[in-house]
Image (cartoon, rainbow, N blue to C red; front, side, top):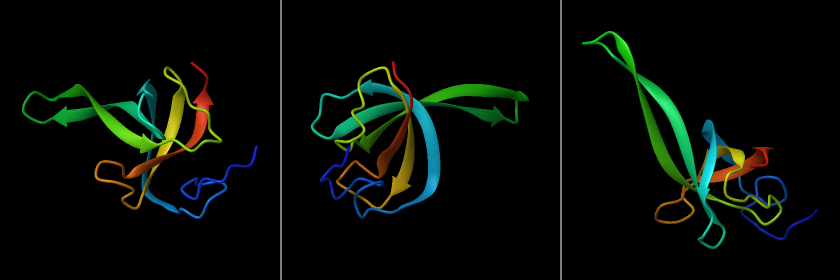
Length: 96
């Protein structure tokens, strides 16, 4: 399915760079935007243990991806798209 979105990493002209992450879509209420929950761990030197953390990252949702709430997606860093968005959805790993 072709899309006319210029900010699509597959069909448009936007380039990705930097970090790539995968996470679960928590919200898709905003227009062309999804909120992705990314889980990660941090090592605490003082206690010699790992701490589980999570982050909610706003990402651009191209029309051709058709991402819904509960889907597992891969996001990639790109140039600043708006005040809060610096990531774009590159592909859907699993339908939720």
